[in-house]
Length: 419
Image 1 (tube, rainbow, N blue to C red):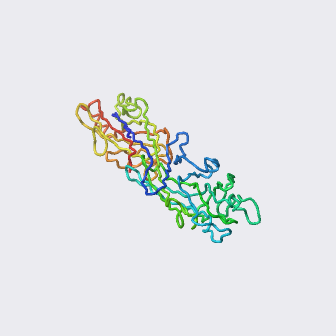
Image 2: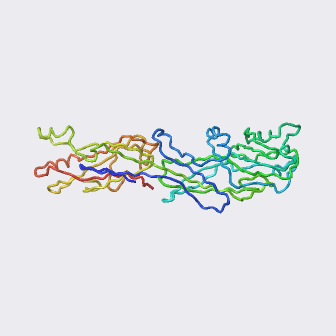
């Protein structure tokens, strides 16, 4: 989207905006899950510039601990159809944790490349699994009593308070041969498990849930459009979701498909009548008309307001040109004089080097205005276009025989299509 501004001492105006959405990569996995996030600039919170997770949640967060998940910045999903079932009995008091119910998940950060579906630009998303749980069931007998602690006590205690470094949640949903549990897993943690005090003929993790934590890139530096990418986790002994040597999954992989949707804003507004620019001397024409004092220059500053959440460039197009800039033409003689055009942008917008933009020349070849970048969402902040004819060219315009009317169209373009 482009915004044009003209002047002509006239000008025309053009605007560029954009949008950013998500990507989808095919996978051979039997289990695929979609994780989506969106960025839309918020005028009410211009300094808050981050993606919002829009993935429909399932599992522990919406069911039991919504406030805590929001506080921790984690999100939960139930994995459809995935189950783990013991391939052999689980002995009471087993010394090797891999011979029973033990849970290891990819709790360290992993990176995922997400690719713009049109431009091919790449960004990086980071994700880690921050908790594991769901519903388990087992043979009865012994039923849930198999987890009764040595010396007596409540069978739920090992599931509510698992060994460090995992943290249990006091969610008490159970029957005689099944129960719901959930453990939070710190970054980089190893396996956590519980050991029964009775032999278990078979054990099944019937519904698998996890929570994940997400780090997304800075949307202000991304192009509008869709970015997509995928990450595949393995399941089973030695895999990413490893529940021991006894517990085998019915699907070998879990694939997460990431979709980032960025809907940028770039809008330029010019006051009514601002598309027509009249150049005059400092203080007006009275000194020339009454005293014959030639103007030092002819100029006009035209204000505009800009809203921008995306990087953009500025370009110049001219009806008449003089070198690398526009020109005004004498309607009678076809003589031309250069028209210098510059731009000043509001705070929060900087060039590629991070420098503020003050009276930056606009040139036909686009040099010097190839990239402007918001540090935060700029919402309807004032900027200025500067139009000027320098003194030596004013003399040419005022020579005897020169016409009274000099005009030309200049088009200023704000363009968010920046690679």
